[in-house]
Image 1: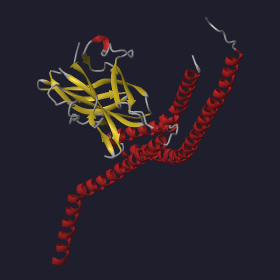
Image 2: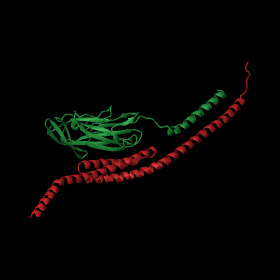
Image 3: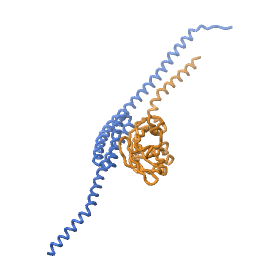
Image 4: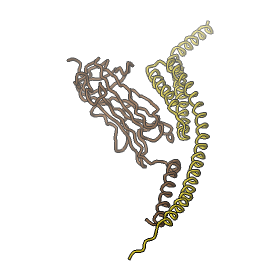
Length: 169
Length: 205
């Protein structure tokens, strides 16, 4: 008779323990969930910032980045939405929007890398083209001046020789 | 004019032509040094510096729609990632400081973000209304706002509902800090921009 009663007490204590600790378990489970939702937004933030960095590099290389900026603006708007959804407690909505941000921003980043590399090559080509054009223009100016001067001088002498001298009293 | 004069003229013209042809090459190598800055402005209902309140009455009732337009201009010489943080303060809470570039420590209840290309001006609407106000002692507490059709919960109070202010702060993404900063560098100095509009809240007409 004693053994079953001890077992019954232990069972009741165990049930009480589980019942008492359930809010903490649920709470900690919920906070883990919130953390993962928050990290999804952080991940999206990270890739947006990284894409922005590459867009900046592409611009410095001389690329036209207006199209990429438009795409980044879509992502920036979505990120704000994700934050608002998160703060309103709609975690799944926030994660969904953050996922969209991530995908678009990754695409922008890839495009920006390609544009940056292309702009860097194009920039070097344009630089050398400019230098060549400058050297050619210098050559044309110097030669033009030199030969122009010779022609002018010849005409000048001819004109002077054609003049009839007059003796003045 | 004798031949020597003509020679001088020829040399001078040649030198001027050489100089003109060199200008594009020099401008390609030497960067232009313009002072970098941002500008931010708030306009009223009709995109003018007027009609900031419904019927030009700064005593705003619950449910009245207030239409403002914000503009940000980028003269930083490159693409910039910016955020406009919107805060709701009363007259006693410390506001942002322009000289030390310290933002208000009140958390933002809304944020706009945008990537501005060089010399771009970005205009966007900020349409808002108060959807919930609670009296608390001598104060009125705004507990809910609707901004651009989004309902937001907040907790801002002012004595008798007087002297609330909406503060707009421009935050700029700083690559070195790897985060948004309420300042940008201009000639080695920190510069910042913020704006505020005051209003009162009334429960009835």
